[in-house]
Image 1 (cartoon, rainbow, N blue to C red):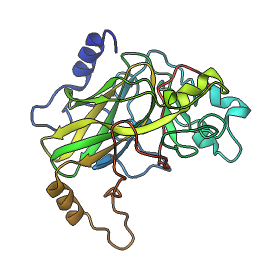
Image 2: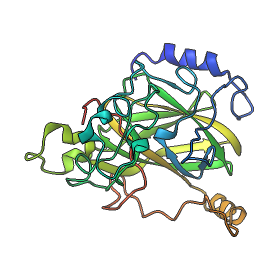
Image 3: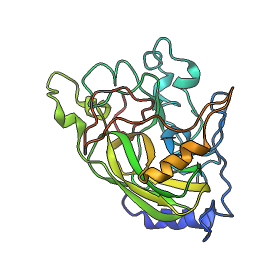
Length: 281
């Protein structure tokens, strides 16, 4: 994220600030919803889907260096990039917005080794440039410290989360999963589509309730999703106790995750995938 100062200043001007730890008063973005995604704000603890950034447009819900959605609005209009069995709504998800989106494809992400296997049709952000950001209105169920687990590809580096317009967490992606396999028989672009899932940092939410998370990422990664898991067992127990499902409802409490190691979590399927990539696959 080179020269992020002006962009951050613009972000702060547009959405204001709020010392009490809630969504800034002047923020005009709204939680993403459509016919498929109807739950409202994404929930913490839980999974933050990168492609489900807020509604509100350029300069409010996100910043992108151009107005073209190079995945959903461009690449995936080609017949070979909207794979058989994939709904058009997935191929062209949010096609008229500037954030570049696509989905996990059998012919790009699932035809080679992965440290962690992404799920077919998972939406993701791609083609990012330094200084771009996306906003997420989230509902924090319990104040406390949360572990951040990232599903990502390619470059080992540090990306950032801001909370209510203030720096809150570094997310250190530990290794390049593409370097863990012999890839001489694959095309060069494959490095953007080999996935890993790993602990990348921690974030503290001083208060429960509705909050504004901002993701700032660098060039060089595909970013699928981020799992937020309570570090304090007492916090986790309190969340479970207050969030038991009733008939006809679905609990938002995340399933118990597999044990994590730094940089590698095993060969397993995941529920989402995103990419910050410059290669057009």
